Image 1 (cartoon, one colour):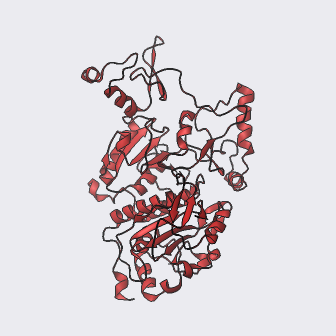
Image 2 (tube, each protein chain N blue to C red; image 1 turned 90 degrees about the horizontal axis):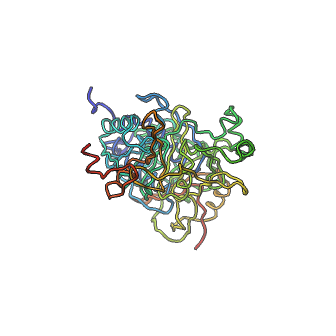
Image 3 (tube, rainbow over the protein chains, first blue to last red; image 1 turned 45 degrees about the vertical axis):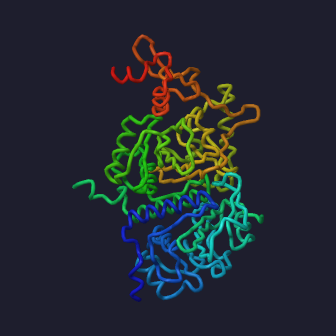
Length: 189
Length: 293
């Protein structure tokens, strides 16, 4: 195990995870909002926001998939040590972390079952930048419409067409994060 | 044992993670009941164990908590849950709807309009709206899967056939975002219009039945009805006898054994705020005088 893997967790888990969860709840229930998600200092290439999400939501009962460059020894050790989550292939994952390019094809991920749509994957998409621009979001949680810089449109439109099935996304960049539940309609603007 | 021996907000971190994951999936699929591994809480089922677990998973040390039971801040259930979180989470508490960041409620939505950033947590006894029509979980799950809600309309139709009107007065079924039929918990149907397009996030927790569901902000929630029998929110045809409000939901209070009665706001904070600003109902007295008595 690499020594860096032992560092960078929450120093006060009950408090820090409560703030991180509230931010995650806010951004998923109000798509287009961007909030700070802090408390974790994970090793590269994982962002601070993505690290905080993993520490807040993952444990031994949630298989995690590391995509592309995120599937490195130090991150595998960090997640194993801090979350205890099993590391699995994309098809078996309840959480997946990577850049949008690395996560492709996203049709690999669990979309839930017609009688249990909650049994679906949550994707944590690492982004170079997050802006309230480019794509127009409409749906539950949104008064009128909001804007968010999504990596593409077609995959999210196809995901919305599966509703109530589909995967849910968090977008992370540094300490900032945004959410996109499967219920949101996305279109170019 | 002191209260500081508890983890923040009572539950252990593993339990909170499990509840938090269920809440997020509930938000992603509005109106769908997400199963969760409900824990035993230090209060009986029926006292809001589901709501308490959802509140515990959402609380941060910066929150201000309000707890109401049928609209009242000062009844046993509300007081005991408020004290529970004061002791185990050390959060600030309030009775003012506008000052609260999380409001846990049993069977009412506050009269004062909620704002963005607030979370309303409902205590739910029976989360499945179809349960009294179809007792088998396997069947109701299939009905939700296939969007097969004809049985609910038959129930409402039988109400009309028998009573001439839809007699369901509370826990009135709603459809969320045109997909899932949902039990809004036993709120009076007077409150149903407030479910729709609320700026606040609404979370529902059923402890004994082990279900969590959610209505995100600005989500369309429609009360089921028929073209020729449209949904009508109802209340007692009176004004509040303490504050004179004509638009609030009222409780009927029996005052003696001679048939005496009065109607008062069920939302105590709303009534108190109105009285403090000088509104007086038919049987009311000015606030300063009333406090001295």
